[in-house]
Image (tube, rainbow, N blue to C red):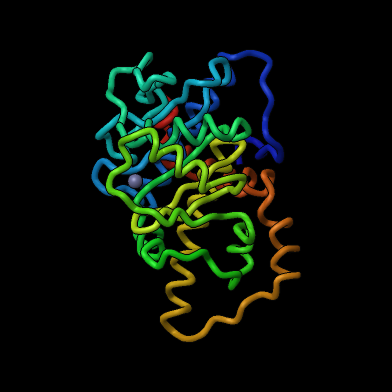
Length: 253
Ligand SMILES: [Zn+2]
């Protein structure tokens, strides 16, 4: 290793450094989503609230594959949905969903949504994840089901209803659609998405093979505090970040 991995969320004394950090983390999250096969055409978005302009967010350029995105490709969108920095258009669904989530949840610095295969397959069941593994306990009592599919999310009222369903949780399963996760950092929101997708896969596999044993409620609640904290989510992303930057350093440009 060329440098030690930090074990806590970094702090910044100026906006420029903070913004550069956010954009590099966001670009890395997109590369990881690409690597894990979460893209589906032009669907999917991860947003990061700007450190200086809290009603603006950074998001992926419309119709660019996750696996090609660099930090300088990211676009800045204001509260009206206008692109105020960057050369690309914004995905209308990204604005409709994420603007309302960021508005409803001042604590949320980042939100992730994509049409990953296991997430959307599980979403069609219209039910929450069961506490059947240690990892899925991150979501125990901490995710919601948005049980009201009405087509592609293009209007702000629909985004508002999704934000309302999300409530204070870290994630929502959008029925017949896919997963949505949020966090206090880009790292955390991206990690929750990755591990939630895998948890959907694990439950689908286990349920197809037999009847999974549930972790009892007391142990699931305890485990949630161990693997489901903001810090745990942030930390879990760090090995992935180091790996993808080492493999694809151009993402930082
Ligand atoms: Zn979607």
